[in-house]
Amino acid sequence: MSSVFLDRYTAFILHYRWLVIVSAVAVMLVLTAGLQFITASNDWRDNLEKNDPHLLAFDALEDTYSATNAALIAVAPKGGSVFTREALGAVEELTEAGWRVPWSTRVDSLTNYYHSESVEDDLNVEQLVDDVESLSDDDLARIERIALGEISIAGRLVSRDGRVAGVVISFALPDENSNAAVDEITDYVRNLLNEIRMDHPEIGYHMTGDVFVNHVMTEAVDDDMQILAPAAFLVIVCVAALLLRSLFGTLSLVVVLIFVIGSTMGVIGWAGMVLNAVNSGVPIIIMTMAIADSVHIIEKIMSGMRQGLDRNTAIVESLRDNAWPVFLTTATTMIGFLSLNASDSPPFRDLGNLVAFGMLSAFVYSMTLLPALLSVLPLRVRPGSTGRSAFFDRFGAFVVARRTLLLWSMTAVAVALITGIPRIELTENWLEYLDERYEFRRDTDFVVENLTGMENLEYSLNAGR
Image (tube, rainbow, N blue to C red):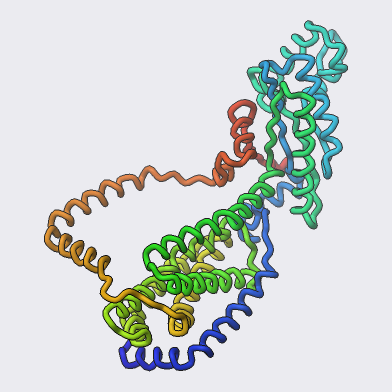
């Protein structure tokens, strides 16, 4: 960008600063109005294209047989074995309650499992556990022997060591408003377990299952949006305030960040995108990357004012020095994130496009709204305060004086770090999206370690008819 063009451009911004501010506010309000149309989805299918062959194969499997939506509640007596009257009574109570869970269609457990046994020429089929209170010690021993030896339930409805039992509740979710049904199921089961825990404090209960995954993922997204994003914003603002040491410089920075985030998130609604676990991190990504544009411009303005320039002249000098570097960093960052459009997963494409738009917004607001704001705010600095400049002058001299040593040492560090690349492991384990703060993660870890795995491999075999 030529200095003549930039000088004319900056003169225009400063001359029509109120028009620029009002126009920026109007644009921001129009874009931010899209927030009302944002919808969140907790459906894992959104991670795939509608015509993805794997998704089509899965849908065909469910159409041929039935949809797999289930909850698994592990019953873990603190005393050890589940083959006691107390523990089996708790399993029986939970089994009966499972039929009352909304949208439930089937409940499987030790207490309603039917065992077939041949006696001479007869085939006896009877409930494995019947009338728990009347079971004798011999009956309990027989139940334990049969259950642990039955391949259809050992490692599924009871752990192979007999210390944990499982109650599996299957659901038929509605085609419409399935998210609301999942929320209803999750809330019901949580309340149910809270009541049962009060009646059986000597028994631990752990809930997991694919029907809960979508609900918990939504909770994680909400936590990020309501806790993590504001916390990151606060940290960024505090650090900027410490570095800039200017109230109005920091205030102008905050205004730009709010405009950028509001505009970008509004685009999600206007574009009909769906907020999910992947693109919910957009505000944090934008904050951490977009702040650099404004900081460079503000710091240069304050540096010029410390050297005796008046405010408007310092703004002109800052835009003249920073416009091209800021444009280059914005353009290259946008190109990098736009490359995510090559991804097969729609949420990652949305992530790339949103961050690219956020970077473009940051550049536009930094080159228009920011200088206009700084020209009307009472920005003041202490003349001659060059402590940080002197520090970086000394640091630069140190780097130049020891360039050979630093070159080889930093190269060695880079090579050492690069050797870790082969150790990277790719995984699509949905459980690892959550940390141990979430009860669902802890419960699922317990079930996987003590009862059964959570992933099934299913085949559909054509009989050739």
